[in-house]
Image (cartoon, rainbow, N blue to C red; front, side, top):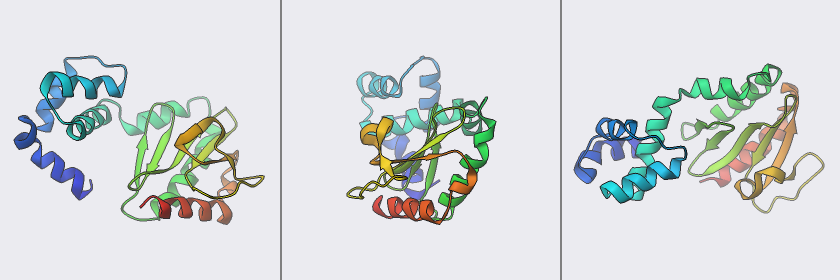
Length: 180
């Protein structure tokens, strides 16, 4: 856990009136289908600031949905893509201790201070890797963001682990560096 997050958790009782575990208990009594619903509930009903509310909901979700389970669900029936996913994760983990890998229901966000990559099993035979590299021209391989919209500036379609090559690693590093 990074220092800023730990500091936020440590300050939570003083700033919000409850510890993280107490807030998790409050959220367990409710059922929210969207992240924003939980955040808005904490803000409106309990006067929690946005930053604390977002952190509480995020950490509550992580507890309720084991990250390994989320990735396993994404690749159910797409097991042939797991080596591609594993190769991507192995690369980004080498960039530094400031990389956060956040599995969600359908994607995995790769974050430094901001998200710089997004991994999505797009079909049974292809992973779409979204990259955020502003002002980078597109190529045949480094396409425009396509289905990622404004979350990413580019997309690379991957079907085999050997496509996680030097060129792709360079693009990942460039996106990582720009996410300061």
